Length: 102
Image (cartoon, rainbow, N blue to C red; front, top):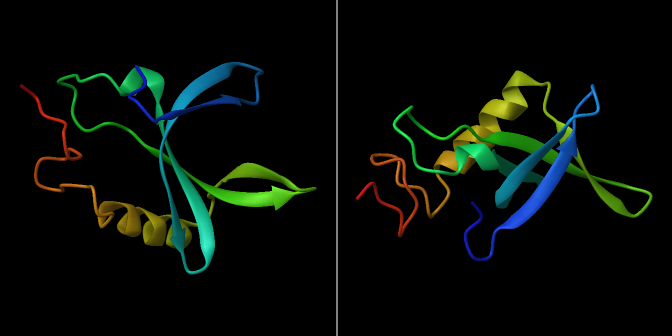
């Protein structure tokens, strides 16, 4: 389920299957723009633990933005750390403001 203001992004995997994601946020790390996506089936509250998020580097190709998977572990670690420190993230409860398990 998308919340107000969330953007829907559909990605196609190597096998041609479409997967829908909600754009959680974009953030800049070391001058590079990154997008954090959450699978739509993960956006619902569940008791299976923290919501899985995917981090992509945003690159421009022929004037269009493309999402590129990160294959460098150090780059991933830097961006993941920045995401955890993101203003809206509450590490203790693993919720964003306005979200609760009530």
